[in-house]
Length: 374
Image (spheres, rainbow, N blue to C red):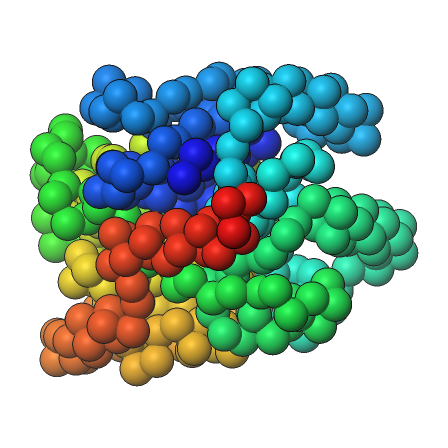
């Protein structure tokens, strides 16, 4: 098949890692010809020199996408599609804002639209609620207009997307850790080697309001009230986002290493002792299987999507309760047996996820199912 992998619209976030992993894993399937539309978020971490001759790359920089940008995206990508004449297009995350000639498979990763029970969604009101509903309406419109089929990461999301978009052509391909975690490269350590006996909690995420990262200073305060002092939270935010959550009095306990390229993330996990994810809504988070493969205990929110992914491999807390989060962290710090048990449960839970190569194989099978040649 001649396949277009469309990442032209992707700028940041966890979807970038999924797309990068898929592009790399396609090297294991040399029978196809791959044309990769490379967006800003992908280009920063994509080494084109490692790919064989059946890969072709096209760079795009559309910036922040708005209604005025979409006609330009349509015109630009259509020109390239006519030259390539692909059998199928696939994007691991959408909407793509592009109505293709070839069948297009698009990933759905917008949890706030399909999890109305999320504490974050419940508190949206007034003008913000109106803007939220308009944005949701437009996103749904572009999904329905552009997709021949949808791909999601859990069966629960599958059912919700079928209901939301009124389509039965929704397929589940589980997310997972990337190949970087199987064969990690060596990079310079990012944290202070001299800070011994400090329990580090990693929150590996870009800033989104629903990630609930603002709760971290409150959790720090509760930990100090419990008499816990030898700990640090490690975040990976840009400067502007970090300024939203940092507190001068807590600077000893909150470390920002800035955005980290996907290939370097295993090093950061190695330097930390647990993964802390206070998110309020997810379709999936690769942080969960990443922590499992790196043998790190997980502390996360007690919400349905988290339990469906982590099972017994996590300690759970009420998503809006900093005091309960601190209590769970204290348990994790003080009990090596608990940490070991969570790690072992995580290694078992990993068996429920596809390997990176198997995930790519399933994506390509969907391409074959919906391709023009069929």
